[in-house]
Length: 258
Image (tube, rainbow, N blue to C red):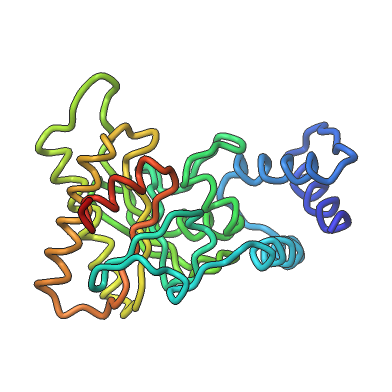
């Protein structure tokens, strides 16, 4: 894998036409590769690069502890609760909390879900998002959703949605709450339009967009339950994926009681 890393790094450095020293150890090389992928704009790339990148990323994915629907045991009807890394779920679609440009996070190695998903999927994901946005001709609106391939992720698709951003020190307005509900609704409708069987939601807007976790969870669960109860849906599994213990306890209480 060192040879793969060296090839990918040299390609991206040459593409940038910059003087960047490649470190000697594997972990530092891998961190540099992620950083260069993060800052790379959407633009054409060689088939050889994609072949080597995909071999590396697919190997990394297969070496993770992947989770299937059958491995998730907390459920209420079609709704499931699971705590872990959303990029390890083998489902039809995972949801990405995107920004209005829909091109992923350009901050090197940022820990937001947008960055993590794009980093695991590969540079093709940003390029596909760019094609979608070029066709649309304007920024993505809050409460809408777009679907793409998942490339080197274990899921089949990524559904990208833009949640409301809450300024520090303020509470969500009714418009913000409606916008968040529309995110979940739009993702469910996109899943149905593509006849998906399963979709996994992250905590939309609860990270850098500052939506309070408890209120966001109430809106998420209510919107999903109302949709499942009122729609002839293709979905058999709707997973709420949480990462922190705090989020897990919030969802667990709302879904299953004390």
